Length: 531
Ligand code: ADP
Image (cartoon, rainbow, N blue to C red; front, side, top):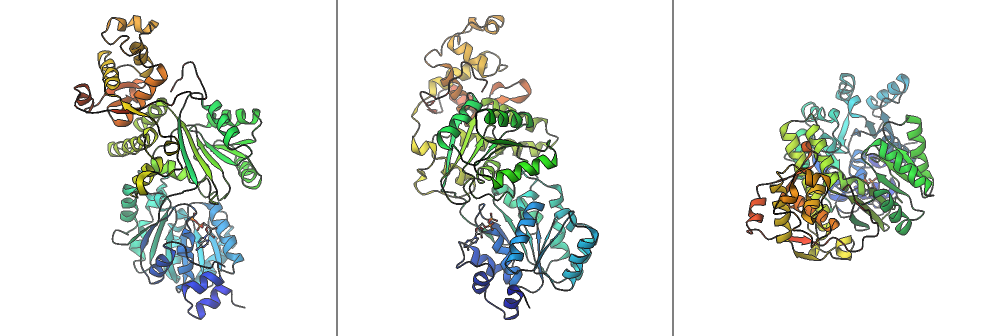
């Protein structure tokens, strides 16, 4: 008996009836219909849609409507497996071709492809690029190529996968087969790169709204991160499933242990753990209720758990794209969820150091610094975070007030910060631009530390001129001036703060500086923070 999918193809069905009959869905969502029509008609395109937006249908359905088999390039074996299982259940003839198959199984898939017995075939990029596979595809009838997670092609991006670069071969070898590239995160630069590398420069772009209205964004000053995290979970997400992102493996381990000790069921996940431990922890996170996964960014892509109620960052990601993608794992089911981040100046220094120490070209470093700066701007903004986030992806939010981020819910007070900025910049200048925030603040508030006396900084005119603000307030001024680009934290000099070109105009009083008040009465106090 022919599968439902095949039956529909024989009768040259329209897209909507396949959507109803095969996928059991009543109607298209957003731009899906237009995309399906475009691709079914043989067009190339780039699709930008947030996680959970319904990207899969955009290539699955045209694969059923067009002659031949749709080839889906996906970097994630687990994701391929899940999708194929779902498709088989719906009666679609789907298969995977990746390294988990035995020789016989792979042969069988190849035979079915050539015999026209497959609707959809999921292939890992490194497999697809083998001469054997390209040769196989050359002999088969191909409906389309779908390149999922297309941002992996971007060298500037946060998920760069070298094997994706080779996918440019698709446009060269199969110019008549439509290509549809899909991603849930791509700023302007990344979009251009995808289009260039995949031969989609002239193809239309379908850009859905990137807004995730059910996610509440909140970014707090890092003071004592583990305590702050625990308070956040206890007060807002007790018993909920969540993901906590940390930069290092050691911090993942420590944080998971600390949460467990505090009675919160937490598991670690990072690339240094045994594959079996990773698989076990991931299974528990997905199948049990209320498990918190503490992870490096090795965890997450392709994890389809609808009821993740919060994503917490204990370290600053690399870019707004990375932040958006990671926080986007919260609330796929549309229910209220939180994206919470604790960050401080040391995070900026750390990320800068990682860029400086990377083996990338100067251009790479420049772009990376730009992307980091944009994220720091988001972290320091006094305005609506959602507007800032969506604005970065070229989207406007009506009235710039979302009502569901920390800044909209309790707007920070702004004050004229010109004098404070001048004091801080002068202090950095007079001390030789060789010291970090902690020392500069000691000088400003007039604290006679060993270092201050050692360098004779108590003799400077700037000594003690900033006693009207406390240490916490000064730290906030430092971060905001870094975010505004008047100060730069030099990662090679242990976070020494240096003046930038624009600092001169501030010192001369030619630039206005509005500063956000550090929130009063922070819940967690630390006598002397490192951030
Ligand atoms: P993405 O790949 O963009 O993250 P998926 O393709 O996995 O999103 O779709 C997310 C969820 O939305 C899936 O559960 C899917 O069944 C559902 N979905 C997709 N399109 C529609 C639609 N037109 N109507 C209802 N549900 C849909």
